[in-house]
Image (cartoon, rainbow over all chains, first blue to last red; front, side, top):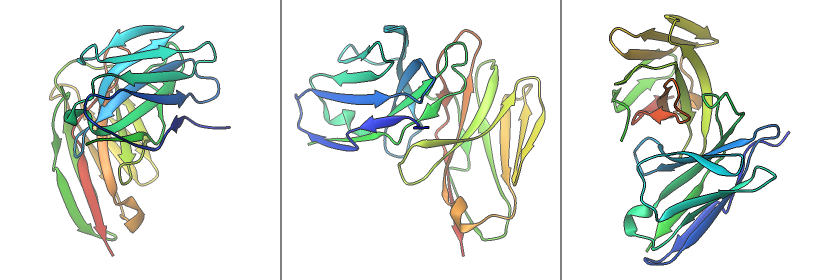
Length: 113
Length: 111
């Protein structure tokens, strides 16, 4: 039973570029949440997708957008990258109605030069 | 923004000793959870305590929750080198879909 998988594991971009990160949820889960974790900090909630719609959003600018597909997988898109976007991006999946029980992937390490 | 503080920010102890870390939060919660993170990898769920519970055990882990003080503690007994990691508390509130994390405690177990 595969857990949450994220790709790629590492990514290097330059300022102003755009990036897409991908996540496949744990089998049986239909809800995907994305978190940003800066170095030495705790994860911060970006947004959550359920039924292919954004259900809740944290305090992140519109440069951060997402998508959920019919198979429940999800993408996180970040436009006009800034140096401050360098972080570990974590995807978590859960079942609807049990958002408190989230299973995390190993993350994508994004470095902005 | 982070939900609250974790204390201490870093803790270094000898193998076999007990490790205690604390978490404070700001708002009313449904549940409080503790996660472990090794070297910038994903988060591994350790234990969950509900707002109506005061203490919970799982193996070498003991968690307490004081909702009147909005605080929790995680005790790891008989520590091992493999316990070296960062530990985070996370809370969820009624009607909210997200987890709100503390800033974490970096635990080092010295052999």
